[in-house]
Amino acid sequence: MGRSFWDLNLGGLGDVPAAEAGIELSEITRRFIPRERTNVNYLNPIQNTMGMKYPFLPGSDYFTNFKTGDPFTKVAEGELRLPGVTYERLNPARRDYTSPVTQLDILGDVAPYSREFRSLDRTLNMGALEPSERVEVERIRGQVSETTKRNTFSPYKYRGKSAEELDTTAGIASMLRMGEYLAHRDTFINTKFFPTRTAQEDWERRNVYGSTFPEWQRPIESFIKPIYNKSTQRDPIASGLILAGVGAMFGKTTATRAVGSTIGLTTGLAYSAVQNTREAITGDRFIPKARKKQLALEEYTDILSYVKNRSLASQAAESGDMASAAQFSQAAKRTMYGADIYGGSIDTLSLAVPKRKREHFRSMIQEQDPEERERILSTAPRLERRIYQAAWGMKVEERPDLVEYFSRHELPDLGWEGWHPNTNMDHVKVKIGQSMGINMSQMGYYPQQLREANLTNPSYPGFSKREDPRMVAARLRMIMSRNGMSGNVYPVSNGSGTSSINISSGVV
Image (tube, rainbow, N blue to C red):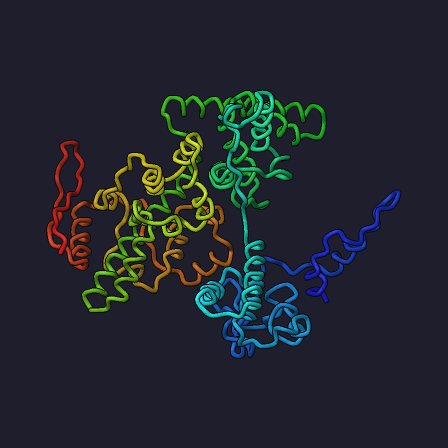
């Protein structure tokens, strides 16, 4: 009964306001039938008959495993959406579960992000369908597109354009520019009711200065720090006034509100002034320290993935398995370090950037506004910047030298389990991030992904572990050898009391 009630997702439906007090029918029901606790994991590894009868449903490789336990409880109103008597009565034309259209309909509803759905969708593009089936497939795709669409970005249309360019009068042009300026402001009203943002604005507010996933259990990290971080992107006066209003909300009496307002005003003004001055001197935009650690982690695991797949490609080629060699080579190109930044398509290049940024990346790389491009480059990590610079015809930064890079970060030896092709590098990233004290939910990882990484518990290298250049050289020689490269690795003194590593090699 409880599941049936909560699956209806009624919210406040049925609440009747009275003169003195509200008669809240659904609230009373919610008190007597509470929602299941989200912090309790229910495990049922017993294989069910649905997974055997309908093998097209996702299993353990998806967020929701429909092949174990009670599948109808895995999604809201599962009896209506999964194969069975109720689904057939609601969809009389969908009783043939061997039909790819029926499978696409079910998967698009309950598992639109699954590998099974993507594979079936591609197969239907190549297969011969009846006209009526083609219409139905397009309808299903349209529904999936609407339900999975996360963000709709709105580029600037009027900023920086004259009345002649807009083909209107000067007064109307000014009104259009002002209206667009107000629509793109980062205020509570805009966020709540008019979320008009470019891809870069949305990325900054959610993943640079704001909180990606605000958590009430972490009020300082999720709410207080983001307010101050965002204040660095405003002038000191505006920042002080905004934080004065926030500070006043923490007081109950006039005196406490005045104290909170004063603290907010002074700290907001000072923090914004300091960071703006620093930006003016260095020319670099302020990025919170926690976000810098996240970017450094993504760069490290990206380079590790590149080295791993290049090595696996060479081993496969030596053994005569050219199909696997090509697969690993493609995987190496799907890293920011190994991406073909001059010849790759936007879709191919988007596979190289972290998953959490792909939707923004596709919009950012097509940006035409010079001011917006400058902002994109100002918060992007260096490997990602190279992709934008190549696409926009700019001078491209050099890739970091691997030898120099691994002299400052640990390069695992050949016995590391992470070099094995079956080791999930996302799990390795999670473990490294946790050891660095990073809240991985702020990098777009869901709780079930974190639990999976902790269950597999792969060994991981130390991010900031400094290596003896001679040890780095020895490991690189072994990796070079396994990649079919001849040559030598040797340390060279640079006269400043430290060492760097140079590689002289010939590619076979």
